[in-house]
Image 1 (tube, rainbow, N blue to C red):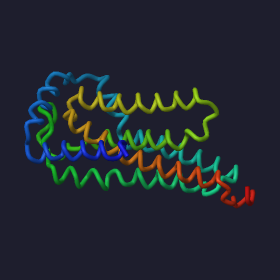
Image 2 (image 1 turned 180 degrees about the vertical axis):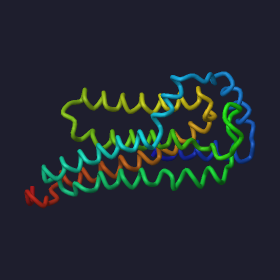
Image 3 (image 1 turned 30 degrees about the vertical axis):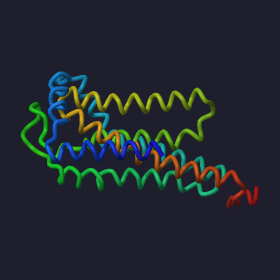
Amino acid sequence: MALLGLPALLFALVTWQVVAHGPLLRADSRLSSALVHPDRFSELLSDLGNAQVAVPVLVLVIGYVTRRGRATGTDRWWLPPAAAAVLMALVPAIIVPLKDWTARPGTPVVPPAVGYFPSGHTATAAIAYGSATLLLLPWLPSAAARRTTVAVCAALVLGVSYGLVRRGYHWPLDVVASWCLATVLLTSLGLLLTRSTRRSSSGTPSSRTGPS
């Protein structure tokens, strides 16, 4: 599938360039120099990727979906919220070893250090807001509400990404790599939720309603 294979391939390419100090890093540096302009607004946008901000949003949505699923007797109501919670927990388990392995230095704006690739804030925002959106979509009453929710999710993730690069907290490729990882993870979650929904609607007995 394109939404799994292409982002995975792009992530591998970018990671190889970072580890090998390839020519793509020179273009990344030039782009960063052109975009960096630290200000309060970019810092506020980047803060939307903090775990203290993004994760509670997902937790609230998990609670809402859990209550709705139990109240309506949905078959395997526990699977979507559990899968989203596991996916969120996987983010640091994936990102931290990659940061240690690649040991990429930060931009000239931040204090000297390594461990900036890939962007943890971008991955946190994408998985938290993206998972929350995937959980909510089946419960929204109209196509307009679904489109609005997806648009808000995209705006939040793009806002965080822009803020991180504009503030100089991350190189552009750090953010792109996290986009690729998040696309693979969210696509996997979406496939799992879709299969679960199809199984529920195909006649699997519900604990409350019996055979459909």
